[in-house]
Every structure is written in C-alpha cells, then in structure tokens.
Length: 82
View 1 (spheres, rainbow, N blue to C red):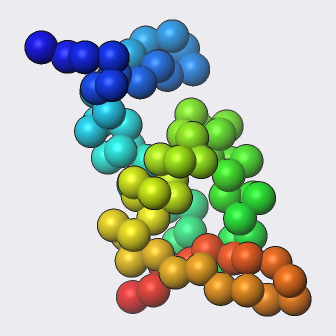
View 2: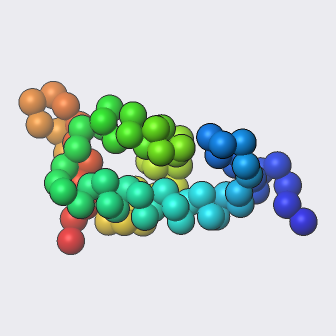
C-alpha cells in the first residue's frame, strides 16, 4: 500500500513511487553532469524542467552518483568525481 509520502506527481499529472523518481533523477543528473561541471542554478533549473525538485537532486541523488561541489569565482559548481 502506498502512502502520500511514497508518491510524487510528475508534470503530466501522473504519480510515481518516490524510489522510481529517485532512480530517474539519478540517471538524469549523471547524464547532465557527464559533460563537465555545472553551476548550481543551472542544475536546479534544468532539473526542474525535467520534473525533479532541488531536494531530490541535492539530498537524495547527488551523493549517490559520486557528486562533488566546488566553488570557483564565488559560484558553486557540481561535478561527478570518478
């Protein structure tokens, strides 16, 4: 049985299990950062366009993909460390 905490609403109005949402976000973030570091606002904006909240990307997925943040010229960037 699913509770409201287990479900997330997609932009098309459909619902999915939170674990499925995390898996999709993990795959999306890996692909997005594959080409190199990206500034935090760009990650959050593109993630929102893809249907993922800042919270899911930062707290639920980022550490799972070997993500690292660094600061350059006052801006925080995200990257994957292999």
